[in-house]
Length: 192
View 1: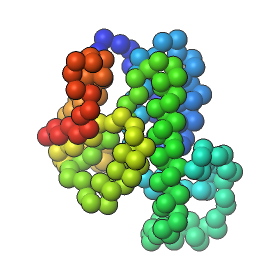
View 2 (view 1 turned 120 degrees about the horizontal axis):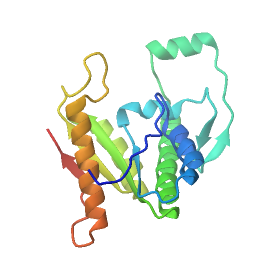
View 3 (view 1 turned 90 degrees about the vertical axis):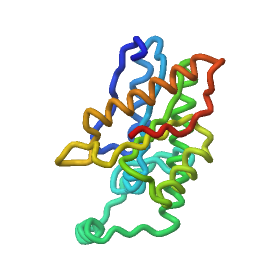
């Protein structure tokens, strides 16, 4: 859509901090990156709270994995519970990671953009989480509300219609950011 080659550095199941670390390692391999587009999904925020893998904390401090007993791991699958302090630390870390992605892109003269695809209406807790992380971090993002049926039948990954809507929203935002005469303050794209 923009006449540039796209490269997907995504890895299935990554948390935001893992995605940032991968970007930090891989971005130097590209001579002139045009844009860095990073996804953020409030529905997957729980991955950012996992400490049973090496992870970053607020301030982008590296921490080793913390082992949990098998019974606790199994119980948490069926009865997910997070303490308020855990959620607050996750919000702070995720906000720091989003800022770091934006700063990393800008350090390479690339346009940064966080894309927030969402199937169906956004719930109040999801909206609050998005605002606390992205708006408070003051990072450029585009919210793409998608028809709730636009996903692959056997899982919640976007189908071709949703992928096209997400790509259109990204291209529209990146074009607007390139052209100073157009509005680059658009935060919400409603595509259904």
